[in-house]
Every structure is written in structure tokens, then in C-alpha cells.
Image (cartoon, rainbow, N blue to C red; front, side, top):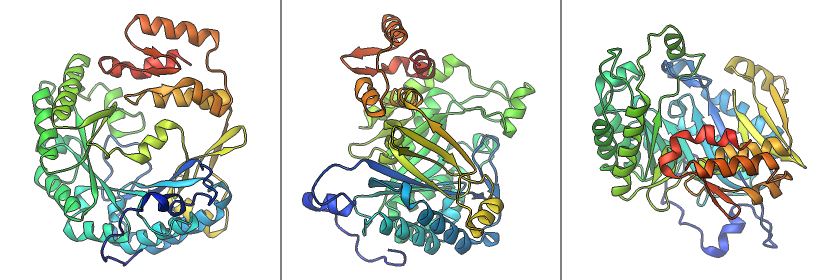
Length: 420
């Protein structure tokens, strides 16, 4: 796949799909599985980011050495690589900094190990920052195997972008989205809504401004938009400013108005508001993220990557070494055991299914999820909590399915916690 930029492989015919994705020839269903690859370097660390990312110039990154390490880890984790490969997601950090040929070697190795010899039918997403995505780099990523790009636009106001510590300007953000679209891949645009405009306490993004930015991006032709609220994480520059009372934040009423206005505007343009922060045209949902929300297994590869794999009646949640030097040294020494690991029992897995599944518009089938992980669906406390939440308009209970009405989506975390 790497270096092969001929005509795109057509989508598999109905009868080809099982073979393409590595399903057994007898037609028995295999559980879907995703792969997450973490690329840990950025040109600049954003003040709100708590992901494992480290500032480094592109020329100072050992692109080939890192690809070699990820492939070695992939081979060492082959026993955990079970199921039908559905998605690959390369996140960071700034994966659009990775030399496309080296990224392509990693993607090819994953597909080969999964017996998925072509990228057709497997969603392959690469996260991109506008500061490292132009026409040439977008074509290179598509040539490497990416068929979906997620572009970190974040905003289209210069003062707000500076407040967020972004390296690009509004024009650069739109140019990056155009470059991704021109490469012939599916495109998501990330936006942050309800953000302060600098450190002036009196200036915040209005609902009308948020709507205008979202519609400007959709007018370019993207099929997916992610519109997130700012989450202040403790171990970040913004977290430090918040502790000292110096971080301007949008009030709950303004945020709710911005959230609902953005939702209505995007739905009027044909986007389905299918998850709290995500909107998609028909057929454009992020299959990788849906896998998280549905509790599918995923293999985590690379520095600081998390993974979750089923092992009998329980599941293993693991994390790799949290900085590049340590990760590379461990791989070089053939030390593949996780840096951190946690065994998730049936009840822990069900609580996680509830927390994530309720983020989806359609909610979750609680009884099916409980049966799959081997937990009790309706203990007395959950029955009581469900009745109370339904009476308050925070939850809809329809047979075995629970979902949160859109007007109560901003309270999802509290609703899910009440069901634990």
C-alpha cells in the first residue's frame, strides 16, 4: 500500500467483505476490533492538551525508527489481535508530521497481520493539524493508506486561536480542510465551541459565531463535524490558570445555548447529531469512535497508547510507556509488557458501556450489553435510579434500551454515574 497511489481500490462487493476483513470462511461472525496508533510528537504543545505529546521539530523525529518500534510491538501483541478488523486510527500528537512512507509501512503491517490485504472496507483515520497539512502532505497521507482525515480546525477567529495556542490562522485551517478533501478521502473537522476570545473576561464566542464557523466548514464539503466543549484538565497550562482563577470560562447557560444552536444549524444542513459532540452526513459516522462507544476491543500501539482486549470473562486495559524515549528503549530491549495494566471485571465493563453508550443518540441496549460482559442488567439500585431519571426527563427507558433525550445531553456524565 505505501507508495502505491494508483486508482483507488473499489469497495468490496457484498460477498467479498467477510474475506477482506479477515472473517472466518464459514461465515460465523467475528467481533469487530479497532487499532489505535499513537504518534507522540507535536510542533507545539497546546495549553489545554493533556494527551501524551512532546514538542519536536519534524526533522528531529526518527520517523523510521518509530515505525519499526510500532511494528515490532504489533507483532508481539499478536495474541491480543483477535476479531474482524474494522478501523485503524492514528492519533497524537500530530500524526500529519509523520513521514507518509513510514506511516504507510505501519498501516500495511496492521492490515497484513489482520489478513485485510486492502484498505477498502477498513476505515483508516489520521489526525492532522493545519500547520502540517497542505496539498502535498494530504496526498502523501492518502497514498500511505489513509481514507479519512480528521483536521484540527478548532476555530475560525484569530484571537481565539491564539488563546488556544494554535499555530495556524483561520485561512490556514480552511486551506487544510480543502487539501484533505482534494486528496479524495473522507474528512472530519474538529471545532471547539463556547470558547473565550482571549483572556478578556467579557469576550466569549456567541452562539451565532459558533454556528457561522460550523457552517463555513460544512460549506467546504466535509461529511463529519466534531464540536467539543473545552475540558479543563488538571495537568495542563489551562488547568494551572484555572486553579489560580485566571482562566475565562463560558457559563453553563451560554454553553447550552451554543450547543443547541450548533446542533440545530448542522441538522438543518443534513448532518445527524449522532453523539453528544459529533455530527455526520449519512454514512459518514466515525466508525472507530463508535467502536469505543459500543465497547469494542481495540489494540493500542505506540508511546502512551491505551488498549483494551477481552480475555475470557474479563478484559485487560493497558497503557504503553508514556514518553517516546522510554517506549523506544523498551521495544529495543524486547520488553513488550504494558507500562500499566488493569483487569476489568464484568461490572466495571458494564459501567463503562453505560457511560459511553449513553453518549450515542440511540443510547444502549442495557440487557444485551450486560449479557455480553456477564453482569446483572437490573440490580435494585439501577432500577430505582432509572425510574427517578425518567421522571426528571433525564432518561428514556424503552424496553431494554436506555437513551438520553437531546435536551438533557449536557447532563450525560451525571446521568450515567447515577446508573452505576
